[in-house]
Length: 189
Image 1 (cartoon, helix red, strand yellow):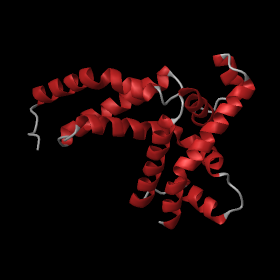
Image 2 (tube, rainbow, N blue to C red; image 1 turned 45 degrees about the vertical axis):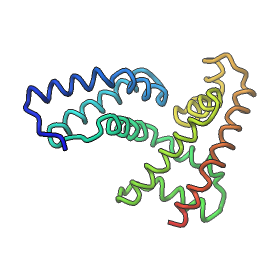
Image 3 (cartoon, helix red, strand yellow; image 1 turned 90 degrees about the horizontal axis):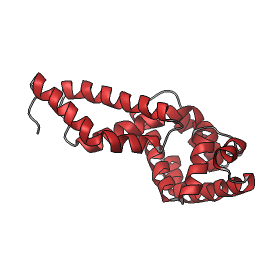
Image 4 (cartoon, rainbow, N blue to C red; image 1 turned 135 degrees about the vertical axis):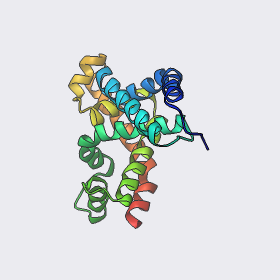
């Protein structure tokens, strides 16, 4: 267990942590958001939360804590695009089970159970995205999480519209397959 910090030691620890993790944390965030400005805002929120928490209690595993907070901030940012993402991944039909999953994940009331399920879903989604080839992953992120159209992505990258559609299709197929077990576990929960 860490000892309580004196104010000077605490400031020194915060500065050392920022120096040690700042670049890698920014890179982690930047890969998952639309712009540098969004990444900087999220990173600033992480550091703010870090400085507040370190005042109140010691953090056992600083690295894991920082990345978990960053991931949660990213998820909060992407939440507004969550419904279309879920529709795409789970092919929403008039299937009662699928609608139940979406209602669980998009519910506004945060109980410990719903918070756990939401975090589990987003964590598994990001892990599954990391398994994709970079081109497929990037198209999926741009379209589903950053809400860019295929036309905008094509202008940005110079890649043909149909190629982008194909890459996203392969990404969605992989994600459906990869998240199928999680879907079953959540529905049975």
